[in-house]
Length: 230
Picture 1 (tube, helix red, strand yellow):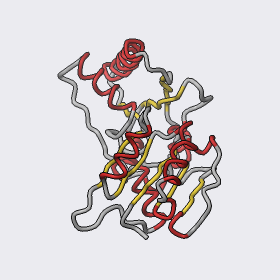
Picture 2 (picture 1 turned 90 degrees about the horizontal axis):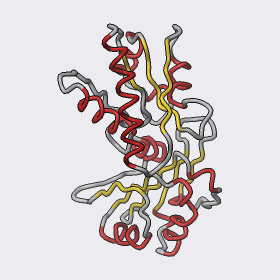
Picture 3 (picture 1 turned 120 degrees about the vertical axis):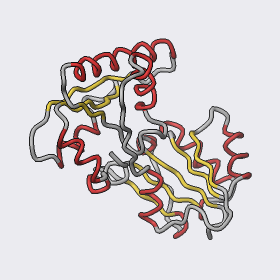
């Protein structure tokens, strides 16, 4: 699906969705609806059959495995009925996505199944493009990472790489920004929340814009720190 802006959906993904008989969409247990579904419904002219799959935001691996297997079995049921089936995911499907676990469950249940994964524009690519912010040049190193439990690890990652893309920020936003401030790197940092969606928030630290952010802006947010960028 890309980061959320409908025009950043690939032509291939758009074609597949138009041809699908049923579209599965992930929905967090804490949300009233699927964001990915809302985006698709804005661009598809014809009405489609949708099925929202609820995924709880928990760390219990056994329970998550059970949920993904149940969702995979539901998808396989529709495939066996002869329905052309698609599954939505924001960003790129193989980067910190629920799709990865669903894919594994599908292959586990039916190894003969043919699955086509359509790549998408990652949130950090959309954020960098908004600011014309180079992610890397020449032999510079880039690290993409989630926020670790121990922020000292994030400090080391920033120290050891030229560019660091910080994802899965959520409720740790203020802590991460405090660390970047402490490292005197705010003027080499850009921030984006809900890029391309309603409620979008962008901050360009390279232009001296203040990072006056609230906790709610940690959701669907990405932070890029490039030490070589002044």
